[in-house]
Image 1 (cartoon, rainbow, N blue to C red):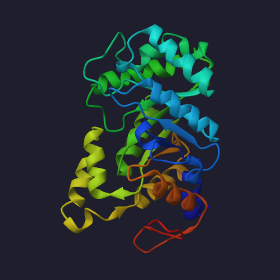
Image 2 (image 1 turned 120 degrees about the vertical axis):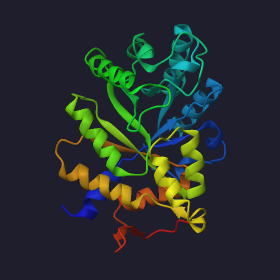
Image 3 (image 1 turned 90 degrees about the horizontal axis):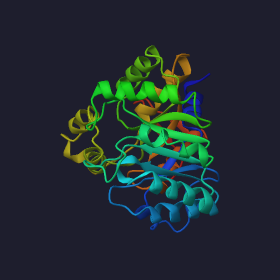
Amino acid sequence: MSQTQNIQNFLTGFTAETTPGSAAKIADFRDHLRKDTVVYITFLPGSNFDDTVAVAKRLKNEGFTPVPHFAARSIKDERTLEDYLNRVTGEAGVDWTLCIAGAVDKPVGIFSDSTQLLDTGLFDKYGIRKIALAGHPEGSPDMSDEAIATALKWKNNFQEKTDAEMYLVTQFAFESAPLIKWDKMLQTEGNRLPIHIGIPGLATLKTLIMHAKACGIGASMKFLTKQARNVTKLMAVNTPDKLVTELADYCANDPSSGIEGVHMYPLGGLRRSAVWSYAVSDGKFTLNDKGGFNVDVDLA
């Protein structure tokens, strides 16, 4: 199979995400995304879950698959968790969620991590058929490496107890080598959960640095700060061509790869990242001599 086809295959079926705030600025998601696209709904610290429910209902009505975030440290107790699940399943037909600890220093209630949410059994009770969990290729500012490894073993074991299909989704990164190294390490350690790799969407270097700092991105910051030494590059729109090419080659040529999907973070705006992603997955691009893509669409 050609390198171009590998790249197409790698991006086909990518998932996207939105915040309630960003969703309010989008007149119709159908103007940007194709029917049945999976769209995660980010829950930011201090947010109101009513907004999550409203966006989930809207996405469902517009023909998409909504995936609301359940952030453990922002959920008071089991009764609150059940209320949230009851609402998104009953009002928005949700059957797919993402469970994370959440970027809150002090939990608002009894939950501190995603394993505690899963252990309630409520996701099975409410018919959740898919559950995404956080993967940490660059570690986490909130957990030690040992704690992350222990939690991953627990999640693998829990997969045998739940009716839901579970998988890992990562934060966005900018270099392929650490991601590939992490994937190989997880397979060696016995991980059986598929991996969906986070890819940064189209954005200026200045915007990427801002989001990376806010999200606690680790080693990848070194990559960004090196690029930022050239001031003229700060406002130029970056595309993840090299990252996508290298990961696509790895997935196509290493049968042991655990990477099975791509999650696109629309950091510079949903429309531009979606246009680029669809163009690449549709094969409307050529490879240039610098290792980048010449994409046959208007990204302005």
